[in-house]
Image (tube, rainbow, N blue to C red; front, top):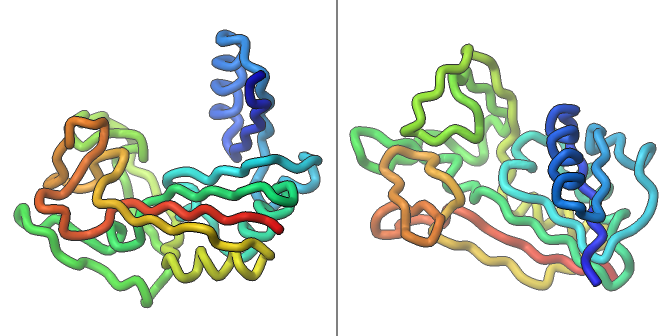
Length: 198
């Protein structure tokens, strides 16, 4: 008895790749292409667990609407799990090999960057990508937690850890366990939150 999985993404290409992998591996999974905020018009049902992973929240302009949509898909008694980049990491910069606060969490929550890489590139890969604009939003843990509470979820656990799944700053080093850390573990790099629906 295995899990029946439903995945969503705004990208047609990501959904096509996911469907291909599921077919290749003979997995019982469905994948739905939609803007998250439009998901209720194309996906019915509720699930035992809803998961939001690394980098998702920074692409969402309305954290309260995200929480409402995500909560409606959680069965009563089910959980919503968030594993995300810690807001502290998004404020930091690497200045001559030293960790420095480079921006404010409380000023200008919307973020615009000109990038010449993709979010999945590693720093050492030096992949050539045409420069493009990236727009995002910076959410505090308080905003994420309060959005879930206001949507009817009960927070069961919050955890902050000194590692991340990828190298986001040049001074980060591999830890031997498939994660990246800043030497000395001075700040949290990721957080998780588990919330339950009554």
